[in-house]
Image (cartoon, rainbow, N blue to C red):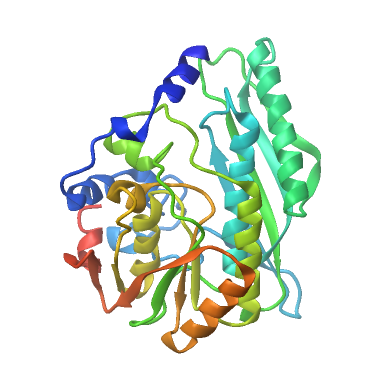
Length: 346
C-alpha cells in the first residue's frame, strides 16, 4: 500500500504532456468501454446492440418504478468505485455517494435512501479492517450530509481471502422519490440554440480520470478534486432551478469529463454543441478532467437572464460554456464534425 500512496503523492499534472490534437484524444477515448453507456453483458433483449444506440437512454442509467396510481415514482441508481479504497476509503465512498445524489437531483428526484456493499475484503489483513472502518465513516457522513436513510446493516460485506489480490470495491444503490412526471429533467439537450452553462467551479485536475488511465496509461493518481459542502451547495441550486422551471436539461459531469458528458447529452436528440474552453486551464483538464461538483445544464435563451440572476442570488459559481447546435460539434471555433460521426466505430 505504501508504494501506491507514494506513487499517487508523486503525481502532478505537470508530468503529463498536453495533447497536440484534442480530436486524437477524443477518438482514442471513444473505444474505452467505460465511456459507453451500453453494458454488453447485461442486456437481455433479443435485438443486437447497435453503436448508434450508445447514449440513447434518456434517463442516463437511472431506473424508474411506478409506486401507486397517483403518479408517484421511485428512481434508483447504482454506482461502483475501487479507486483509493486501500488508502482513502472514506473520501472514496463520499465521492461515490455524492455522484449518485448529484445524478438524482439533476433528474428532478429527491434522494431518500442508500445501501452499500463492500467487496473483496480480507479481514485477516489489517488493511481490510482499515478499509471497512473508514468506508463506514464515509457512508455515515455522506448520509447525514445528504439527509439519506441508510439500510440497517449499513455496509454488507462479502469476504474474500483465497481469490488473490482482488482490489476492494464499494457498490452503492440509491433510491429517490419523484412526486410527478413534471419534475423529471433528463440529461439530453432539448433544442438547438439553448445556452449551455456549467454550475460549479472549473479546476485544474485530471486525477483518477478515464483520460489519465486509458489514454496515458497511468493507473495511480490522486482522487479527483472533491468538496462535499460544495456538492451540497450546487445540488441545492439545482433544486431551486427546478422549482423555478429555468432549466431544460441537467447532467452531472461524470466519466470522461465535460466533453463526454456533453456527448451523452447530445446523442439522444442528435444535437451538437459549440463550446469555448478556459484560457486559464489546460485544455485536457477542462475537457476530460473528472473533478466533482459540476453540472451541465441547458437553458432556453429566453430564460437565461433569470437563470443568471437566480444563481447570482444563491452565490453559486457557474460559467457560460456555449450553446446547443443542430448537430455540429465545435470546440474553440474548430469543427470536429457532426454528432453521427462520434458513434462510428465505437
